[in-house]
Amino acid sequence: MAGRTGSAGQAARTDRSRKAWHRARLRLRRSGVDSFRGHGSDWLVFGTLFLVVVLLTWGTVAQPLWVAPETLVLPVIAGGLLLRPVSLLTLYAASAVALIVESVVLGPYTDGAGRVTPGTVLVVAAVGLAGLLIAQFRMRVGVPWTGGSTMLFDLRERLGVQSRLPRLPRGWHAEMSLRPAGGQSFSGDFVVAARTGKERRILEIVLTDVSGKGMDAASRALQLSGAFGGLLGSLPPPAFLPAANAYLLRQEWDEGFATSVHLVLDLDTGDFELLSAGHLPAMQLSAGAGTWTPQTADGPLLGVLDGAEFHPAKGRLRRGDVLMLFTDGLVEAPDRDLTEGIDRLTGAAETHIATGFRGAAWHLIERVARDVNDDRALLLLCRD
Image (cartoon, rainbow, N blue to C red; front, side, top):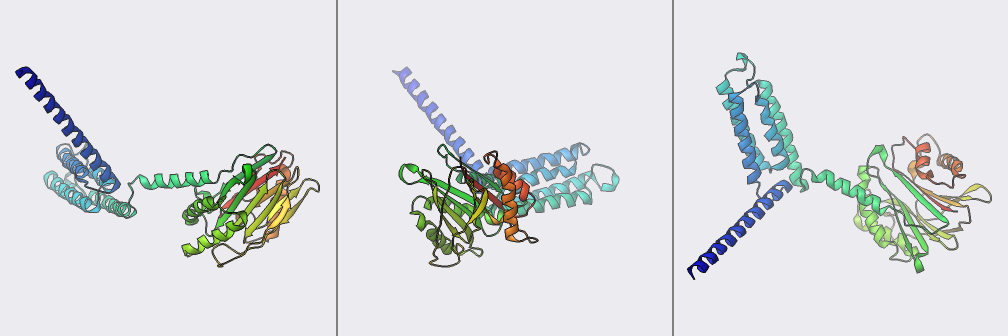
């Protein structure tokens, strides 16, 4: 009986120890994560960095030639990335005390190498100021120090996913190329597309050019692409641009306008409707005549006029025909007329007729607008 009681007590103590260890690990991990994100207590990180300052001070006093006084910038940099501003200032005070201690123990910097010099103080102070600015920005944004770049990468990937064209049935080919201004990763031009209607035989594509360019327009482009993607297919095609216009008006942005073109194509017959909101005309290549014809629809800019009306242009893509949608970055330039830019684009496109325009979108941007400091987008839709 006594043996069983002892075994039960030992098991209970073991179970309590495991639970206590589990709670301690969770508390430690949660504290570290919260500190890294700028939330919760950062006592663990502060304590570690404070200990590093003490160890570096001891190393400098013991071996100044191997552990230079300037090594104090290491915990200062880490503190700027991980600590709150209040804790960071305390760490800076500890670093300042460490420099004073090193200076007193080692003697004047004129006595030889490995001592605290005015340059040492300036370097540590400059790095500390930079760290404080980083910490304040990190607290204001509310993301960890690596989270900013991770978030931007995620936004870029989402824009790319939302701009993918759906798979088309045999006999159709579509491709698109987006080129942001200045070689950046974000563009104010975007595409949303979906196959809708009965048996998904209707292809709807919306190409939009948000006011501004590059990073200035990227956040608005991301928001609009998500909203437009939700509207596309949820509304009848004639109601899409009025709904998009009303959405932009509600945002009340300082630069709250955009141009957009909405293509509605019947994949069985090739009949299409083109609705435009202040966008450039689409260009259609007729395989029979070998000429480019503008398809111009009437409608105002998005986000400017309440209750705007959009009137479609209608046409048909026959075998061998091509429809080209593009933004103004491809054809507009201060030193040439818009018509001249469109003629240059269509002339370059004719060289791809023999290849059926496979891979042509990227090459056309490279050829006609490679070094243009504006967002560029080109979409080609071909009926084989």
